[in-house]
Structure formats: structure tokens, C-alpha cells
Length: 367
Image: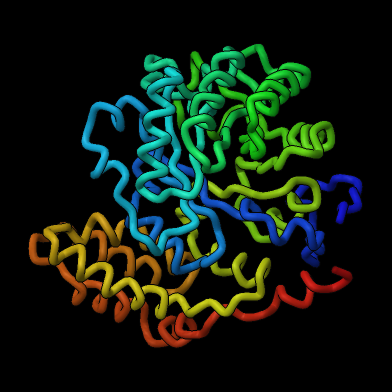
């Protein structure tokens, strides 16, 4: 069923009531996802995020095709079966290498192969992949075709709205048409352009202005394409507003720093019953103990949960206990219990309450 398009209002504009998401946009496999983030979305992080949202689509950190073809691919592709649906993001520009890397990803059980055409870092550019590839749409199309010929999984692309001075709407549409012609059915668009020279990766996430309307117009121009919007999205209301115009929303650093938004969105979009904050944390215990038993370190897992109690009384004490103690050689689950105790009784009681159903009536109204 086609969704009625409404005039666009900025997601942050004084909204007192969350908008109704069109029914057709609540059920797609890409309606909500967590962006691939280097050094952050490792397998421990993805396991934690899956506990918060059974439906959200998760992405690995970017893995270069060359590393998979020539390196320790068993280590690079390791993931937990509970992570699904989970996508493998690849970086590269050699069609044959990307095709082989995609095969390895499919054999490892991933649900999607995503090509990174959006990262602006110097290291990525020197390897001739990431955002600089937007200047070579024919090459990107060749890469996509090679991967699609190699695997039966969806092959998707994540890009920016432009790079450097080549950021016209016509240029974005030309790039998108090339992707469609190559067989891409899902395009994730970071709603900022990338400056390949002069800005650091961090600045490229903050300095270029967001242009959500351009992504909305891209969806209008290519209605057959699933368009997923990304960049600067940090609230439930913002997600719902974007879903009026595009097929899905990809959250990045905001969900890493404030992960409870995943639980709120799980309840909001799907009406799911989500455990409380403390119950989610306790569900991590078997996973953590299994990691410790195989020689892993507590610090590598719990660094991802530091933001779980963001905004709650005692959150700073919770973070401090984990940050100061998790690096110790004998650190184990007892430290997590200490961190929970540091929250204080009022917060422990409040954090033991599951997500409330406050959004459900809004979403189903007029659906």
C-alpha cells in the first residue's frame, strides 16, 4: 500500500505527538538498523544490541575484501547466531576480491553484503574505497555486479549524498541509477556529503550540513528502490518522522552512546515486549562468562554497555565501576553486579521495569 506523502517538517520541530508510521513502512527488513561503526559494532556490541531489539538489522564493522581474501577470515567473520539478521559490510574496489569476500560472508551465514561507499577517512581513501568511490560510479556498479553474481544474498550499498564539490542532486541521482542498473535494491544514504580533503572522519560526521530533504526526494525519484536514511538521527520522534518519507532509518553513534533507544523503538515499531535495562544486562551474563572461559577479557564486552543507563540517577557510578575495574586481569561478572549496585536502589527499581507501551497506541492509530 502506497504511503501518503505529507509536507516535510524537520524531525526536531516541537512535536508533542509521534507521527503514525505508514503500515507498509513498519514491516520491511530495513525499517530500523544500526550502522556499521569501526571499533564499535564488533560481535560483542551486536549481541548486546540484539537483546535490546529483536528486529533491528545489525551491521559489522567494515572489513576490507583484501583482509578476507588474504587474512584470517575465520576471525574476521566470527559472529553469534543470535545476532541475525546481521549484515557484513565490505570495503574495496577490486570486483574479483569483493566477489570472493562476499562468498566467504555468505558461507559464514551473514544475511546481507553491504558495500561501503561512504567512509571518508584518509586510510580508506588510500585503499581506494569508501566515499571516494562515489566519484567512480561505473567501478562501484562493476563491484556490485560481481558480488551479486557470486552470492544469492542481498547486495546493498551505503553512500553519502555527494563528495567534495561533486554533490549535486543530479549527481546523486546518476549514481543511484547506476546502482539500480547493477541490481541494487537497497541504498543506505548518509544525508551529508563527504569532504575527502580538509576534514577528519569525525568532522565529516558533524561539519557538512545534513540534507534530509535530498534523501526524501531521492526516494520520490526512485520509488522502486528501498532508501534507508542515516546521519544525525537520535530520537524516537526523529525516526518516526523520517519513516514518513523513506523505507528505513539507520542509527549510528547516538544508538551506541544511548542504546536504550533501541528498546524504545522495538516497542514503538513492533509492539514487542522488551525486558528492563537490568534484565537486558543480566541476559548478558551467560555470554560474558562464555567469553571469559575462552580467554576473552571483560573490558572488551562491557565497554559496549556503558551507556545503558544514560540519563538515569547513578549512571555515572555504573560507568565508573565498569571502566575502572574491567581491565583487571581477574575481572568477571562480579564486577557487573557491583556496577548494578552502584546505581542505587531507586534507579535499580526503575531500571527493573520493562519498556512501557506508551508508543503503541500512537503507531496503530489510523494505520
